[in-house]
Length: 378
Ligand code: XIL
Image 1 (cartoon, rainbow, N blue to C red):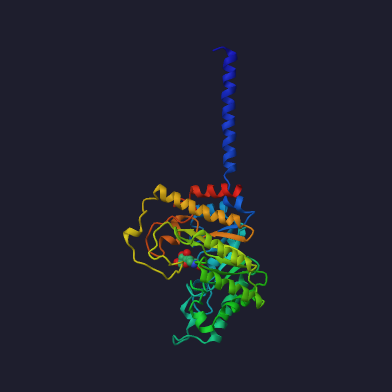
Image 2 (image 1 turned 120 degrees about the vertical axis):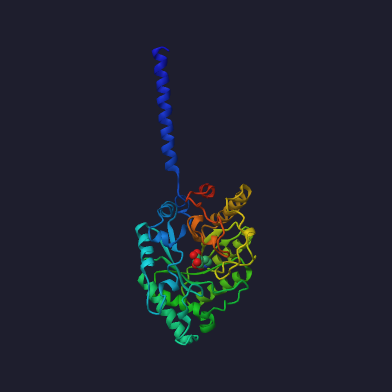
């Protein structure tokens, strides 16, 4: 080989090295997080669990910081944890949650002030185990809400003030709150929260929101609160969806109906189970529980390709809907980071292997993440 040819070859080799190094740098710089592309449309959030709040789940924390700009505590701000005994509050985990959010510039939602579930039994009973009077329950609600909301005043952007007060058919849920106080408990809860932090946003949150009965009842509730001059900023559609419920059109109908009342809509607890439902209409009732059977736990070794493809398509259908209505939606929150710690593995049947979230059991982004990013970039 003559010297000239050798030099040309050397230059070619050097150039291709530089080019591939450049494209590598470009590629990693291009690895966008969900928040980088969705951030100008709506907040994109996740629920965080105790391992994350207490710093034990480093991989989960890395995903949160890269992909999300909003968080909500999966459990530690529920009344049974915040006030396990009357007047005895436990704030350690919630404080850590709020500090973590502030340190990482994450918009925080408080979940949830008044909910019939994960509430301590003492809340509703007297010394003899009998139901308390209406006045006592109102006072307890007020004390709880005031103490919790004031503690995080100016730090939590908004509160799920009341969670799940309405049934599928639109009737009031016969919870202790409803039975002892009557439907006014909702208005009172919103008023107490507003008094404690006048700048905080206030939300009503529920599941199976695509059901016609609940849709109409929520619309009526929002209208009635507004007519009474009570602050309400958004309706939260939980979004614990399955492969066959709800259909996207019904979900859209509700989204539009809520938006038309003049509030924002939030998708607050999104996860898409791929597992067969033991009963079709189980919604997201945390009290529902069914016996384990091998046949309803079919994917312990991973998802077959066609199942994964159907799951991706359905996730993308929902995100396409959210993007279409991004002017009406202020936040979309996933109910957890990775499949490994999704509540869906244990609800409504304990001990199954589910795949409902955007990150797999090793905290790797599933292909759906890139699909959502591509969709959002169009
Ligand atoms: C769930 C949590 O994810 C579980 O860890 C817990 O055991 C039960 O509650 N609707 C809600 C959420 O509003 O608070 C629930 O979270 C899921 C259904």
